[in-house]
Image (cartoon, rainbow, N blue to C red; front, top):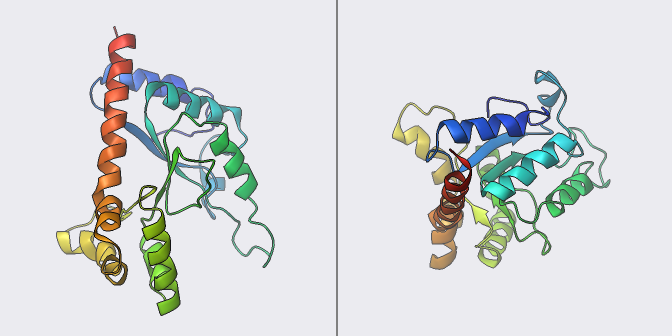
Length: 214
C-alpha cells in the first residue's frame, strides 16, 4: 500500500492518489494489521483493529466503492490451546462496523452470516498445504468451498515469480480439491468472484471520481 493503515492521514493519501490518477484504481491493499513477528517492525504507529484511523479508511473505501484487501492474523504465534483466538472478536467487530465496504480477508478468515460484504482469499502456499494435508482435510475443504462458493477467491500470494511454472505452483497444489468441486464452485472460486467483485467496484469508483475529481 505504501503507507501505514494506522496513519491518521491515510484517507487523505488515498484521496490524493484517486484524484491524481483517475480511472486507474479499483481496490486498495493488502493492508497488514496484525501479522506474526512483522507488525511491530512497521514504521510509524502500530496498526490495531480498534484504531479510529482504520475505521476512517474503511468508511472512505465504502463511500468510494474501493475493494479493501486486509491481512489480519486471527491469533498470536504459540497461542494457548483451546483459548479463543485473540483477534477474533476484534476482527468481527471491525467487519460489522463497515457493512457497506467490500472487504477481502486475505489468506482465509472465517465465515459469518452477518458478514455478507466480506470475502475470503485462499492465497498462500501454506493455506494450500493445510487444505490437502490429509484426506480428511481435503474432504472438509471441498465441502466448505462447495457450500460457500460465492464468498471465496483463489490467489497465489507469489512475489515476483520469475516464470509461469513458479506462478502456477500454488494453483497446482490445489489440484486434489479442484477435481472435487462442482463446476460452478470451481469457476466462481478460481475467477468468477474476482470478476464480479472488481467489475462492480470499478463502476462505483469511476462514479465517485466523476462526482469528486475536478
